[in-house]
Image (cartoon, rainbow, N blue to C red; front, side):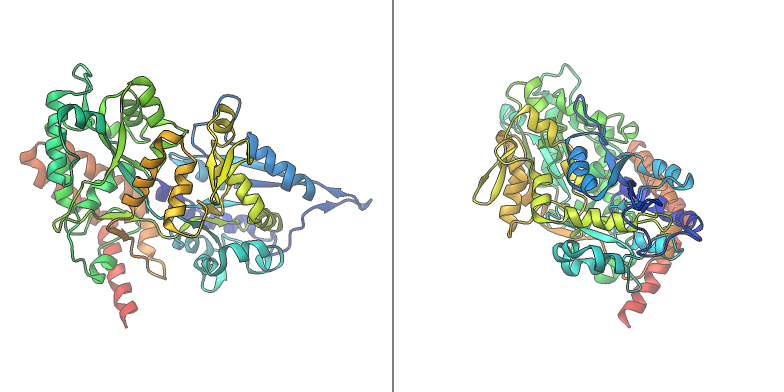
Length: 529
């Protein structure tokens, strides 16, 4: 659903044929062995390659592929099974470029992941690019089956298990954040509507409560889903029919064709032309600039991926309070649509979709690895660290111990735990508390509030059970077209907005949007029969 993540997954789908070509004459399901034997009967160590995000946030002395948890995996899984586990870094930003290189060079990891809908796997599987996993899971994945249960079905294509869907415990997607100390200094209430947001941003610019010396940025904004989606979805009009949701949507994730999107962009155009948002947002495609502006005390309000700003890594809220004594960054849910609802997107209850390329000879090892991870004690250790050193247990919830060593150790634990995003403690309230327990103590109440807000008036992307071929074909191009529409429509003069927006939308539709809309309309009609 998310733009940058989607570019990665669809780019991988487009080269599934390469994988299929590489797999001709290769191993079939279950044909690989954990070790290879020489003539003396001794076993030879094999290598299992596992993809992992490189977020560029590793502390000194660590990397995404060499750290406490990669050592833990090797010692506790690799060594006992005579397997060398090699983690392959995939940059979190522009991941599609790296994956393209790996796939085309034949150096794809044995465990490939995508973080969008199960339809991504279809693009691989239809061309023979994925290893079928049914028999492997049956033989080597009892813990996986127990942990994932019926959710495994969402990884099937035409009844065949081609991917393993990780769990997503918390399905909230974004958070909006505001400088409470700025509101207090100006005597302003927390904004509760979009119009009140506008008035608040104007006051931030005119009064400069952060005393930035003219460098104030009322609304921090970047050319990323985390900035765009919370605003554009909040403008989508109430009362959408199922037909609108299915036929006017697409897997890019933005509600471009739904009623209200144009007015959302018009709102952003107004903010830009009045100097109320980041002036160079079009150059900030990885959020680094907006985060830097937040941490140096220039930004009054912005949006982020849920929980990210309060985490110890990258430490946005923490660094802000260190740089600006008295700064208070708090969650807010102010954007409203025509019915006064705080509409926002919500994730499906699945996280990564884990797949084994057909060219891989390590299907057995891949499933063994994921099954080992699905053991409750292993998963708990990876997610929380060492009891007494990294966390204490209160009412069954692990609370993070604040120390430099723990912060270093846990910086990428969630990326290691590929089969889940979050732990399920039995209720939303406990799950939110657990998510909050992993951040510095002073921010925990804010995290709980942000998670609660993220689940208010949510809407999920409308998935079909069969793929939309036009999406696989056109989405990579349309992502660039959408970015162009956003940038040019926001930056144009207000008097030119309608023509600019309409011309860019026409170009978008001619570049594949019409084809997607037509195919989704046909698929909806077939679904309703």
